Image 1 (tube, rainbow, N blue to C red):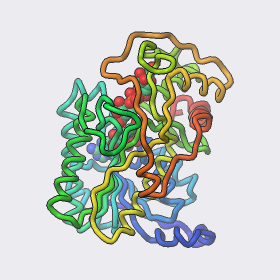
Image 2 (cartoon, rainbow, N blue to C red):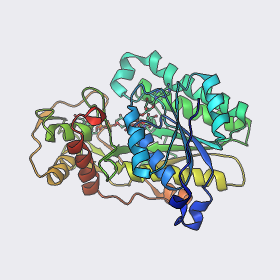
Image 3 (spheres, rainbow, N blue to C red):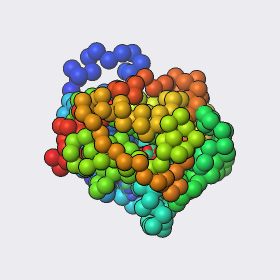
Length: 363
Ligand code: NAD
Ligand code: WQD
């Protein structure tokens, strides 16, 4: 059942003209309670959208949504259900009167996907299939999909442009590729669909309130949450996976992007889909275009938290690539979007979140 409460009129009083378009527009956000989803829901609420989160909370805490509401001063609709449940999706789409969907819901741990590939295909691919079918039933045509730079596989050239050949090196990446192909096939069969595939590079950081952020379960797989847990004393030291890559300091280079910049990219994508005069299926990179090494990240985090982050050099992690960074030109020209937050801001915001919530939402 969708529960929805609208913001009060006074909160809308100083909205800019461009934002007025979004008033009363309703968006269904699958996986909206997760790391990127919660930040995106906040930006949507602030821009005046009505937002319904559809999440099974398999990798998130409902506290994130309470905090989004607190920061925004507005209410979310919340549906606790699984995207493989078509009936629940159809009911949520109808009850919320959504005109577009942002699809974040999915499992994302690369290592886990190697050990549990069928679970990943079921959750991610079957989930996306059920969503597309439900959207078709309800006549909802616009979809923004969370893809990943992982679909470029081992880069043949850098920076990565959207026309770089696609491949996958693990089951997680393959689920993203299969879903992208599914969208391209569906669009080829019916040009009414409006799809924007966003390929994220490495999302990091947190909202500057320190109230919402990344809350990984167990040992973090990703670099910045691990560094943050070392800094807050939850872990003793960071393992740096290899310093013998062909990069300036030998450690892996990635395109880290602030999660709030990333979240705002979704609003630009929605705007493009809804303003467009025809259907489309467009893939767009969301990155900064700059690469930083693991040791760059450690140093920037040390400045942000004002203390040393001890680390040890260990052998390379299986499946890792040396360097990966985006060409963000298409996002600039097509979405009128580019990342504005610096590496230092990413680390400062990640640290504010970590130190005020040392155990994440369970704190
Ligand atoms: P997250 O795990 O924090 O959020 C995913 C959300 O989806 C969670 O709230 C989870 O409970 C929900 N969910 C999972 N399976 C579901 C299902 N079957 N039904 C309903 N809800 C379900 O992950 P995130 O970092 O916010 O990532 C969001 C999306 O972006 C994912 O699709 C992920 O693959 C993609 N992505 C993430 C990164 C990254 O580094 N964080 C990079 C590239 C792409
Ligand atoms: C970054 C760098 C590591 C942890 C993964 C997924 C990708 C995408 C984002 C979803 C690398 C090094 C890391 C640590 C380290 N997710 N590192 N010690 O591997 O670029 O991408 O997350 O789509 O699909 O593969 O990100 O944060 O794991 O690693 O030295 O404890 O940090 O070797 O060079 P990655 P990451």
